[in-house]
Image (cartoon, rainbow, N blue to C red; front, side, top):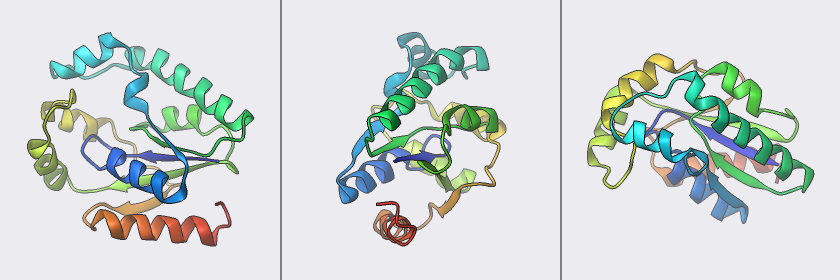
Length: 165
């Protein structure tokens, strides 16, 4: 089973993903670690990635998800997956890949980004992230204004009730 945690930069994908993975005793992976050095450098300098920039990254993620599914690995994957076409490429098996959307206001996320240190994603890119975002209609929706502990409890309960664990 793969749980794909999506949202714009600063929505809490890594924090929630790591905590959820720990609570489920699953592996955690961050899609940012699949980016090329060139993509990371662009983002560090406040340059939004184009679809062309993202294609190799998405292909690498697609292959990783396919391998995890074939190996019956349980993985929580933090990934922006802002466009429907990206998600369509990554959601290989609706029974075994579940989408969680961390939704929050521009103001809240901007505040979080201003407080964050030592991350390559510039707060200057937040507007482009919201401009690119195509909100999913097939995701487990999570309001990120809640404390992380509350979000983890909700998700654990959801997945336990759905008999996915």
